[in-house]
Length: 458
Image (cartoon, rainbow, N blue to C red; front, side, top):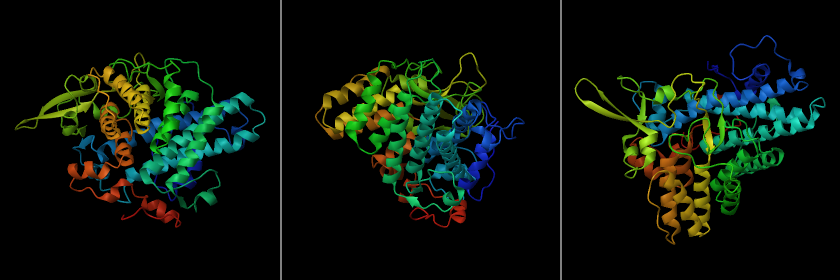
């Protein structure tokens, strides 16, 4: 059951409620406060309660944040088409989001709620004398990772956002925006801290808690987004050369036991919340389907099209209409025997990060080698080596599109960071405006905090 988010005067202030109700929750986010809930002053004297606070942050992303991100930003870019009638969703489909859009508010408020919970953990643990040092180190490392993870999404969605590193709601409610460079500086600090604090977990089949490798993989992505090529390549290579992760067969890549999974959010029901909406299993007109042009981008014999997309032909009463839909995840009902968890970091992306970083440093042999590892898994012929940075930029953008489609907001972020957003979207959507590179700051946040400034042209 999803936890509803009520209309909030300020999501930064009311994030405290999320923390207080999370203390007694084990793996699900519940609507009602548990009867054995600990009071705030007791939470950090009990290791089980602290563990539950952290687990609740993971669960909140899997249950409440990711489904909205995945569907909304795939519609917002060029991956999904929408056939439903919800006005808030259709604004994402048209890429014309109003400041009052409820989906947009949910993304903003839930990510800041996630940050608030991480801040509380990081404030409280240093003085929690009753807790073992090794336990506090691990929990702190995970909180640093999750905070950096949340800020990465916020800065790429909104660009100019408040940087909140404490739990004083009087300060948070008046916080001003800072530039993207300042946010990235903090993300780096958080991920470096996580990498230093966390140990590699014993590599169980399900990698559902952040560890040193998780921080390393995400740090390589953060460096890539800032064009810090050497650091991006170094971190990607550190993870690849560990030998722990392997490229898996396409049909197994998104199973909970995937060999290439680096980090995934546990799903209590064994399927992802968006799967029933994306997998077409009836004769009814779907709400979502892949943009029809997307399927044309695959090369012949690409196993990603074979294994990761499906085809449904539905008659509308007068003609047959072809719908293509994503099948990376196939479970649509509870499944504990062969569960699917929400994979957010995997080895294929690390090879593509390595390829891009090496190409930008004019290590063309290293770049083409990394790209061709991904292409080999897709059953494609290797690319030839050329001594041209632009050749690799184009090739990598295409590979990222076909490899990482419908995985969170990856495609929107890719187009934005590579400067391709306006070119691609203007051709696809007549309603596209250059301002759409950033989402609008939610209206309710602007009313609650008069220090916030709306993004340009909204």
